[in-house]
Length: 279
Ligand code: PGA
Image 1 (spheres, protein in one colour):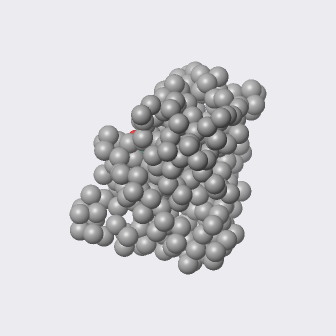
Image 2 (cartoon, helix red, strand yellow; image 1 turned 90 degrees about the horizontal axis):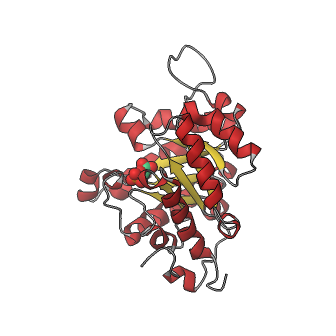
């Protein structure tokens, strides 16, 4: 199946009150000149019929943010500015770190919090994730909270207990109304950058578990409102399969978001799940 063909969801448009969010996590790729070209190219490829249905965020490295901000605002592109991380404190002696107020000042709307690379490579604990969620909210931005199990945890049947522990700690930092506008990215660690995506069924099970956990903790409105993304080896061919699942409301895309043509195809595939075939 190519992304241009109607998907199984495209045949009967997905009914959801939640607007899907497709986010580009560029990690440590693209300097500010490449970022400029890539976002400009993406802006030209996005079609109003897709961006009307799908929210798009781009999360470049810190050094690119100002450049991308000026481009997006200057050309009124339908792209939200995102960051990949921030420190939990607003200011202080934290050499090399960037704070939430600094990001807010640049017009950043979404901040990825607790990506597995931050957790495993940079020692970000659940406690630090919770404190960072609070910092992002203090400055009126939206966190994209990442959760996910390792291959060993999955093999040992511990996927749900790992997700529960990560969520328990993170949700403790949030008020119910903050949970209702939260984005949680389910990213199984073994699927990130490996070319081995989770099956749509497994991703949907995890997404349902996440929604249920948020509902238990924050009430029905929180469970209904939280948007759950899937991330891990997403590409234009598999994107629509995930969105066909009722509890999956978007994608966090790494490698396939680095080039504008491929990322635009992912966005189009997501849009196709929400559009009636005639449009
Ligand atoms: P990937 O990365 O799409 O390259 O697997 C996803 C992520 O880490 O957010």
